[in-house]
Figure 1: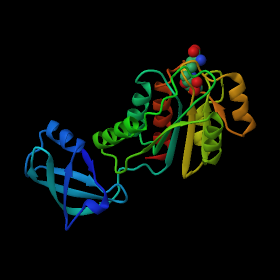
Figure 2 (figure 1 turned 45 degrees about the horizontal axis):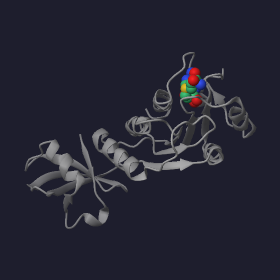
Figure 3 (figure 1 turned 90 degrees about the vertical axis):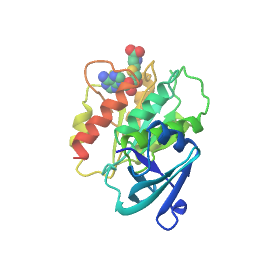
Length: 237
Ligand code: SAH
């Protein structure tokens, strides 16, 4: 079911009215009075909602039962992705949100050819729309651009971490299957030109497993999708 996100303070006596870009989305879905939807407060409760009024610039709902979040993964996953060209960053955001990532962080590395231009607003909008479409309970956070070293620090802080390098031999699955019930996972995917061997050495020096996603070279947009599928198979059943 499509999901709407509101702030807890927007809910007044079991009713809520949305405006702005969400209304465009609801008009596109051809929402009518009496239709049922799910509305998340983004913090902890998801409500069963019924449309009570559809106007040009606003849509109102009455909220009935509230449930604790049910669609969030059991594990907190952060995707570190090198800044990519064209619209590829947006593609990574969409797919990562659908596949259960909790945070998507873009970083710069030696072979990045993408311009380092912050598009935080656009990224946040893409994450919000993907969360609505895929029925997430929470909107994942997107961070525009951190350094390679900050990415390494982020990987170090996670219970399960991986640095993907097409020259690596150890399979990602071996890292994942050797950790029981981790609370967090984080992995890094390189840019179109890949990571340099020196960058892979820095990961190794920091105790981060440098691992493979198989014998074929995946595009930078495909690698996060593959890694998230493995994580959800193992930890989110
Ligand atoms: N340097 C390569 C392609 C890089 S692919 C070339 O130009 O031929 C972009 C990123 O996807 C890599 O940096 C890596 O993080 C990830 N990746 C792609 N295929 C992979 C594989 N088989 N195993 C591990 N990581 C992979």
